[in-house]
Structures are given as structure tokens and as C-alpha cells.
Length: 100
Image (tube, rainbow, N blue to C red; front, side, top):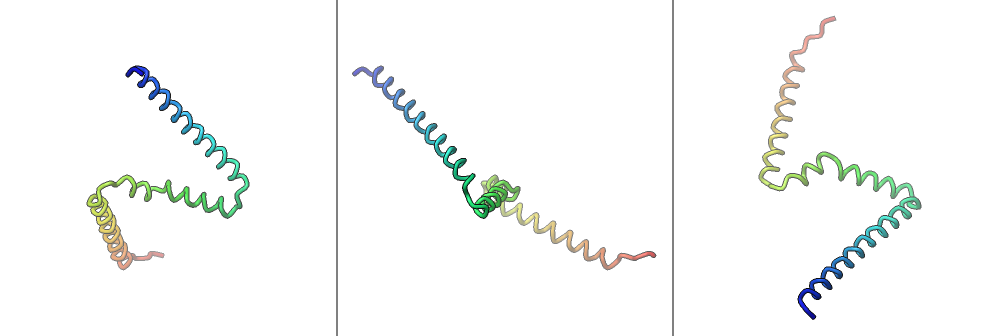
């Protein structure tokens, strides 16, 4: 068997594996579609909640921040701003004058 024939066989084998993978994905999508119409409403509600959590801005932020130090600094900045705004609100609440 020549090197060219071996390369051709390897390419055909890769194509076969790729086609099988696509077939598996199609079968999985069909199974999920079929079972989702028969799932109890509680399971469907749980899936909706899980989906909303996965696509929430907080979760995406945590996934997008790959550096732990950067994440820590960002969270500390948010906490510092929140504390500052709370102090400003408390000081303004004591000085408000109600005019009737």
C-alpha cells in the first residue's frame, strides 16, 4: 500500500467519523425535540430557569473573566461603589426637607 493510498484511506475514515458525529447530533436533537413535548411542566419550568441563569449577564461575566485577579479587582470595585452610593443616600436622607 503506497503512502498516497494510506492518506486517502485516512481521509475517508475521517469523513466517515465526521458524518457519524453529525448523525449523532441530529439524533440527539430529534430525541430532545420529541421528549420536550412530553416532559412534565415542572421539568420544562426548571429548564427555562436554568436557561435564564446560563444566559444572565452575571454568569456570562464570570465565564468571560478568565483572570482571577481581574475578577477580584472588579468585584471589589463594585462593592466599593455600592458602599459609596449607600453612604451618599443615607447622608442625603438626613438632609431632605419636605415642603408642603
